[in-house]
Image (tube, rainbow, N blue to C red; front, side, top):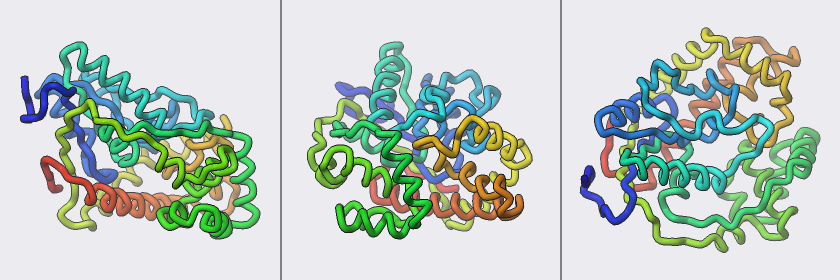
Amino acid sequence: MNLFGVDMSKIPLLVVVGPTASGKSAYAIKKAIELGGEIISGDSMQIYRGMDIGTAKPSKEEMCGIRHHLIDVADISEGFSAARFVELASEAITDINSRGKLPIIAGGTGLYIDTLISGTELSATEDDPELRASLFREAEEIGAEAMHERLKSIDPEAASATHPNNLKRVIRALEIYYKSGLTKTEQDKRSKQNESIYAPHTVYILPKERETIYERINRRVDVMLELGLEEEVRTLCGKGLKETPTASQAIGYKEFYPYFDGECDINAVREAICLNTRRYAKRQLTWFNRRPADELLYI
């Protein structure tokens, strides 16, 4: 059945994107019930076991019996990348489609989702946890701005596309260079663009006013704290969260590190989470505004 008027020689996908706290999960579950679908999480942090409250994973009750994929598939000690996401998501899509179900991707990690549906075959450099940890330690000593300046001297294009405060991406770009001898820009150019095997129908959920999403974010953070986010982060820190290559940089988690070190109070943690989440939502809106959508839903 051609649900969306797309090329049915390809695998149909319903893609639900938008900023954090926009209601993507609830909408995707509703459509899965209506259309006979299963959901693939397009969130770069919901893949981690134990990171539940801070990543707003849907509960079993909220899932309404709909099968979800790419949730709780990795330990916090593991690094994760767009290439790994595409690999796992492709496997899930093939499985869902083979059983006559509609694959539904729901999430806000634009790079992951765009890479998947565009057919880009990434030329990936393997993670080097020791090198990455060394770069993070150096960043603690000299600061994020200095690390960004170093990247600018090595790979100006990647530096211009990366905010100095986005330390994880700065360090990943440096890691690629030190590991492979290629800049991230060079590696991206070597990535292979294939014809996509998917026929996506994209629904973009966005606010009419940015203040709407900012207010929803503030409320969500308060609910997370009430549900026990502090204890969740404390438990994960006891398992080495701060030393992990990817999970350590998750919004809603990294803001607790100075609190646990006695450097600030819980109110400062709340404000930092709200601020960083609002900034992330702004970046998401910028990302998704650049790409076409088949449907726009306003909240």
